[in-house]
Image (cartoon, rainbow over all chains, first blue to last red; front, side, top):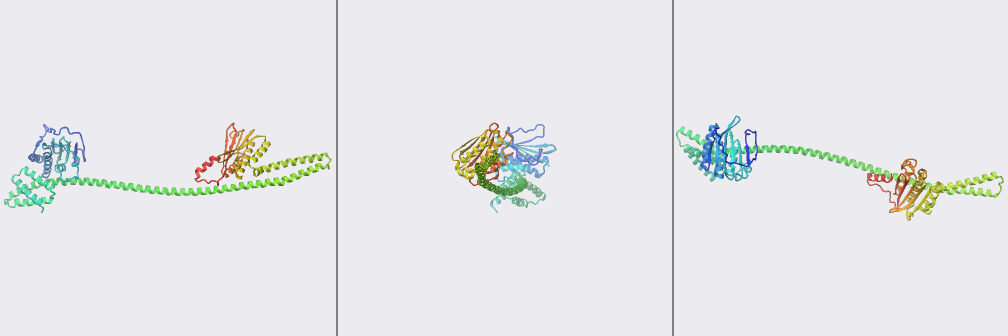
Length: 168
Length: 394
């Protein structure tokens, strides 16, 4: 199941609500754009890797020109998705790269794992659901801290989260 | 202060100290974990701020070097920001949810407005319907009143025509008696006197004798005419002997007078009819035969009195031209008044009248009269009954 949530209407205008799409084919896409700006790839296996991902992300975000507060937001978001991998999938990776759409520049984070997937992704991502639900709650926090949030998941077939924070 | 908050503050200070010493990403990750923990323990933002302030004072108050102090303050701020970021996320979530709720609320308000509008329209519609209903009911009542009036008038008319017909019968009876008793007796007396004079032999002049003889003949003819007229006005047999002898006598006379062959048959039970019904049938036969003689150009006519389940039916069937052949319709032309009068009489005894005319098969007049005539029926609902009556008599 593919679920997309866009907060600031990146590209396609205000895109509120959820969009389901086709079956997840490759939960670990080889997102290494050759010849373009290099993407930073951090494998996630333990809590120590979460710290590594944060550090890489922080550097990329600062380099991209985000403010201190925005950097903190982005780093927190990557913490949430990385912790989610450690907690539920046990192994996976995050990818951090600069992105551009038209004149808009931003930072894109992709988190992918081969874990159990999420059964009721709609239920846990629905705004208005609050409460201590561990990693699930963490995912909606990540969504709120970023500008776009896109999750593709299927029970038994892993999860891929793509999120973007735009400059200005 | 609650124990878990105390514990949180102790942890926070320890983690902040570690970060200020190492200043690594792992320290910041711990700050973020502090924020998450605060959220899940439901420690408020102000408590978190207070924990940070106290930890900062505790850790930095002993440092004398100002530039070192400023640097540490800056790093403490970094730590604090990381700890706050989960709260930031939740606040944004609330904001977004709030926006969604207000959107939903606006939608709800819009729907409510539409509903109110629809409700209003429905109310107006209901009021309109009620008015229409009231008007309908009023006009219905009006028409019911009119109908009642018409019905009353119809009843009045019927009882009036009943009385007129009764008076006519009485008058005819009286005239008939006068003719028979007075005029008839006088004529008989004149005839007797003439015979006596004739037989006395006093008159020798054969011219006078011839004149007397002629006069006697005229008197006899006049007596016949008077008797016939009297009989036609009020058949004496009808009251004394009954309908069958009266009609047999009438048809015999009719046949002699017109030359038409009349076949008369009658069933048993005819005399069970009341006097009113008998007169109606007798008059109907009279009128019907007169019409045959006048218009049908027939050579023979069958007159039948038959029993049917509820009464007696009179049938007069001629072999002449039918109405459609001679261009006359029932209720029109010269015999219109006669037919109308017959219809009225039949109706008064609750009977029915019908005329069948088929080219080449002559005309059949049918008059049915029930035995026990109840009171003249009053139609309950005017359209149905009116139609029925039209069918019955046209």
